[in-house]
Image (tube, rainbow, N blue to C red; front, side, top):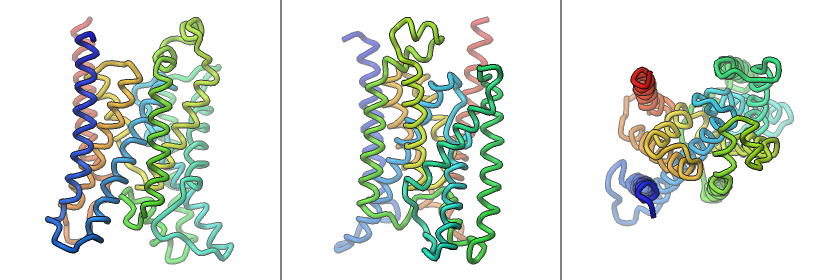
Length: 328
C-alpha cells in the first residue's frame, strides 16, 4: 500500500467515524435522555439519520454535477435543481387541492420532487449551450436565474392554496421534516447509499470523463451513457434530499471542494469523502438549529448551512487564487 493510498484511506475512515459520531451525538442535543424517554430517543434518532442521508445525497450530487459539467461551481442549489423541486411540489399541492385530495402539511414523496429537479437541470443545460458547448460562466448564471424564477413561481403558486400556502410553505423552508417515520427514512437511505455505491463503482469512468471528450473516449468510456446516468442520479439524489429537508444550500458545493483539496480528484475516494463530510455538515447544522432558540422560532437548516458554507467557500476561492498566483 502506497503512502498516498494509506493517507486517503485514513482520511476516509476518520470522516466516516466522524459522521457516525455526529449522528450519535445528535441523540443528546437538547439534553440527556431521561429514563422511559423512548419517544424522545426515536425522534432524535430519526432526525440524526435523516440529516446524514440529506448530506450524503447532496455531497454525491455535487460530485456528479461537477464532473458532468466539468465545472467546480456546479451544485444542486446553484443549478436551480432545489428550486425546481420546490416548484414541482407546489404545483402538485395545488393540483391535489383542486382535485379534492387535500394538501400535505410537512412531507412529500420523492417522486413528486423529481420532475422539477430534473426539469430544472435539463432547462439550465439547454439554455446554457452555445453552438453545442456549455461555457462554465453561462452554466452558473443560467442555473442561478432558473433557480430564482422557479422559487418565484413556487411562491406565486402558494398564493392559490388555502391560507395563502402557509402550511405548504413548511416544505420549502429547508429544515429536517419533523413528521418523518422510519419507513420513509429507510427508503431514502437505500436510495442514498445505492447512489453512493453506484458513483464509487463508476469512479474510473468519472476520472476519465473529467478529461476532454476525445481523451475519455480513447480510454473506452461511453460518455453519452455515463452522462445520462449522472444526470438522472443527480436528479434522484437531489429529490431524496428535498423530500427529507427541503432546499439546503452550499452543502453540495462546498464539501466536494474541501475533500478534493485534501485527498485529490480521484472520484471513488472523492465521492465517499464528500458524502461523509456533507453528512457531518448537515447533522452539525441541525444540532446548531436545535441549540439556538431565538424565541420567535428556530432557524431553518438552510440558513445555518449558508452561514457556515458561505465563509468556507470564500476561503477556498482565496486559497485557489493564491495557488494560481504562485504557480504563475
